[in-house]
Length: 607
Image 1 (cartoon, rainbow, N blue to C red):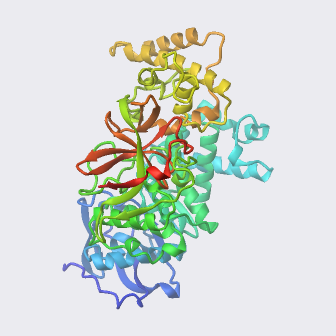
Image 2: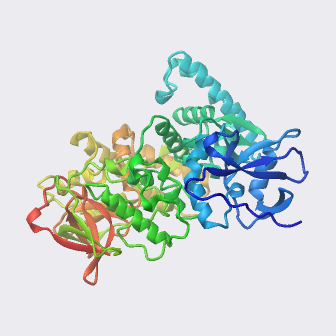
Image 3: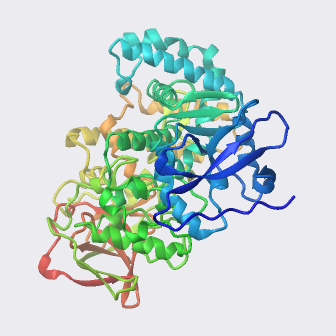
């Protein structure tokens, strides 16, 4: 059988054509047969769009398309077999088949059309994967929880503030606390761990959908019911609820809710919010999200899908567009890559959107908007920048040096810290680095801090980036709790590795009982939230005696610079006559413009 050859579309951009996949009837192991034909998106043809994970692009099989052989991924083959009807055809759209992936020009043009393709589909079918780990029971309990949500809200309840302290919540959701529900809840938690929830393309595919249904094997559930079930599971802390994984689902739902409400974000806000999601092609971290931005950016050249462009050139062009539409330099606060390889030849000031680590902006919680930075290190000044030439990748800013880093502490890398959850005891992650950070900050020093305040007060304000609304008396009490947790963390880390887990649990529980005898171990929610931005950062001390928290890339000898239009100080490292950006930082005592001097500014070139 000959291979299928794609029939090209008409002349762009007037052409409104796209391909519709007609999946022919069949069942079981019968070969997949389909037809591809052109449809006019402006005439609203009937079809369903599939949202799925491609899987291994090298693991392929053949199907019959228009009586010719067409190679597709095994994962897509599985999806189509589940969607195939036994006695009638089904009209679908699947990107891997409906776009000629070998034609980069067509691929770029059709990706631009995906906004219309997904928004005009009769529904979007979300394929989560085949049935495994008793996923049928997981979908079943999700449907039951969703039904309880409907009963609860029909009587005036709100899912946003759902808690078992509410009598009505106990009435409708109490049964899910029973250990008999643990197997179903365990299966539900595993469904939320599936890859679909971590892919960047699904943001727009879900946000644009008029209706969406999630499919897992032979089970299905509406997206509305699924998100309500996950919300209830998360807020009520049901068995095996994973708040970190659930957050991926919530940012997808937020994109959908904002799109439906007509809310459009700046390009930097969109790229930053969804940076934790993955894509096979690094350029899709831009192309897969640009549709969600403000309308005035729709025709920006850098955002038009073009798969002939180099990743570093694309990211640099996008960074220049962001700067051109901003009055600040928030883009320089996007977290740097800690390790591994990013796009080759990427300038240090250009965000590496392939970096999917979750690092909160300074002073903000996880998943916050980077444009919500609340500091004013350069006062009310507006950004003033230039480039070394029309095609130059060197950024020139106006600023001045304020200090140099003298000592740095260990980076708080969440993924490399010991476990912190024990029966009856939960140790804050930052407790594992607190003792060493305290030494770097020299908090045992009896002399006042540079600002005149107590060094301990400066320290607790630094680890919360002076963003907590708590009184200083409350913050002192929180630091005392944290230091006791740090003592437990030190003892736990010193235990022999060969000890059985049950014995370690008992030792930790005993240590906790001794240290918190007749005193609370509960930190306030406000304090805990403002510890979020410590992840992937490190404590440092400067030559002049300031303390701060900065990028994991910061090293002794790096310069602290205040830049015109930047809300936070930047960390720069010399590179000949130029500098490289190592990240931003919080420096206690200069965050509201105390060190900024407009008359001291000079041009600084960042490579």
